[in-house]
Length: 189
Image (cartoon, rainbow, N blue to C red; front, side, top):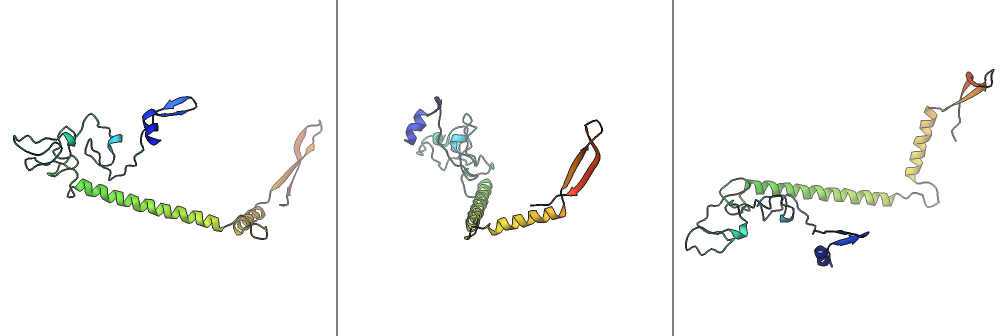
């Protein structure tokens, strides 16, 4: 079904929408078009400017060919005649080489991202578990401890700041005036 939706799109409320495959890309994702880190082919902004991961040439890696006459390396394969050149750090190695400083940086970032994600996931699970442990009401139907604490804080606040009730008296011409205003504390209930 997914392939059908990808090919034909999706209709909702009489409107047809194009659908593309979701690809989760992290810092250690490698693009086969531009030979750079951090995205995949589907999200590459350099589709018209490819870069070979073997020689940094302006062609796709699958189209890489050795210029030496008689070389038996197939298209897209590296050979001993090739001068390796990295697109990312300009070093004398291919773009995916383990010695590449840029590759080492993105792998480190990806590990940190995964640690952070796992930590956040653990915190989210702990919060969910804590919320499940604190019911809204106790077994006897009374408020939970958290609700009782909130009510106590509210009651303390009311005691500190008594509300004021203002009453007005009729003036001589039947209009309200502030001449007879009284301030009396209201009782909280």
